[in-house]
Length: 390
Ligand code: FAD
Ligand code: UDP
Image (cartoon, rainbow, N blue to C red; front, side, top):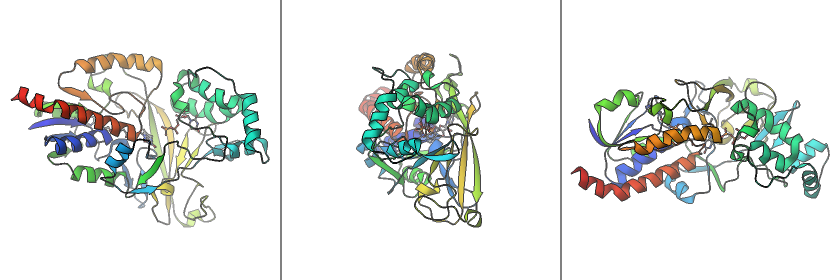
């Protein structure tokens, strides 16, 4: 088989590139995906009970990049989303991320924003520039709130102390002194109105000269394909046969549980609507149990059905052959990755893109932005390349 681009992975990265390259350059693309479905980790599906669930953990679309939102809007409408999260510790729900309501729960009475600010001024441990995830939280809210909400969760999730992780990890979570308790900061927060898998199907339907092979591993397919360039969005250490060592990742195990309408009697969401197991889409468990969070996607998919499905998320150690969900954001891991970045830069006719191939803790909109930028770079060199090949 002969194609212009052999694209490894049918996630946001691979499908954005296939769509752009096939339509903008009229290039032929073959996408190989070793899972049995499109969408990578953003894949969603209807479970055996007919409830739409996120198969690989909660995926909350958010972005501050209008160009990315405009691009994806060609393939989906949007449903405004209220990503509300609570934290469960000391046998009760806490308002989260930390805001004035959380402070009121801590002191056990109503309070003003000024009182909360005065409390923070007293307990925070200022640092000039937070060097790690402990610094970034303790310098904003002090030790008590750090230990209540961040220390245990982070140790469970990463099997490392927050002091061993970049400030950007816990720094993802906003701290506010008003009552704004949205989990995310970005201006655009919405879910694809028909779900992610529908979005991916429409992306693919919009590709011109593109074929997708599911259940196909790149290593098995490679020898049979003649191609101009490979675009690889899998794990970079795996691509190079781990020759510079296995990079650190965190993995996950998901456990789903379904409840019928009868089993849900008496429970309700914060919106007052019946048919839900927990009050909001996500509850974090920093200090109890082996799981970090329980997600009930029905709160944000907007699906109308009488039953519901919740998913518990258990952090796991990673070993080759398992699923690498999170690259580890710290200096030691980045140094290990550098060896692969050097190999990648020298690899002929192969480009690396996406969360695992560039070993970065990227959100969906960020990998789409990265893929659009790469497609533009390829386009800029395309005429030249065609001439050389001819
Ligand atoms: P992936 O989605 O990982 O796709 C890569 C694909 O390549 C995979 O399908 C894999 O099977 C395939 N592949 C790998 N190696 C091979 C091979 N050798 N042969 C064939 N195929 C191969 N982002 C947000 O914006 N909001 C969120 O709320 C959010 N929540 C998340 C929660 C979890 C638990 C996780 C793990 C991630 C979350 N993300 C979230 C991040 C989001 O999943 C990623 O940014 C995005 O899916 C990355 O897309 P990608 O195409 O780069 O990689
Ligand atoms: N975090 C925490 N307590 C929480 C929520 C998050 O300590 O209740 C920390 C933890 O280290 C986590 C990071 O903040 O990995 C980022 O959280 P987010 O919910 O954004 O993680 P993701 O959805 O990417 O797994």
